[in-house]
Length: 63
Image 1: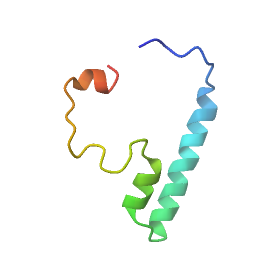
Image 2: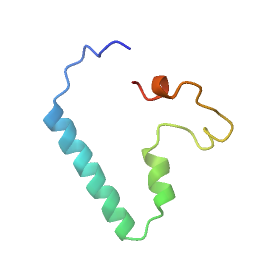
Image 3: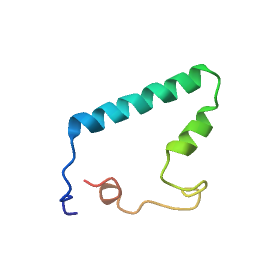
C-alpha cells in the first residue's frame, strides 16, 4: 500500500480524535447505548462480519 500524498496535520487530527472520544464518553454517561455509538463510528455496514472470514489478517490490518 502506497502512502497517501495528502499532507495531514497530525496535531489537528489528534485534537479531532480527542474531541470525538470526549463526545462519545459524554453520550455514554448520558445513558446512550454503546451499540448506537459504535454503529455511528464504524465504517462497516451492520452485519458485515457475520459471515466473512479474514484470510490474511496482516493484510487486513495493513501490516
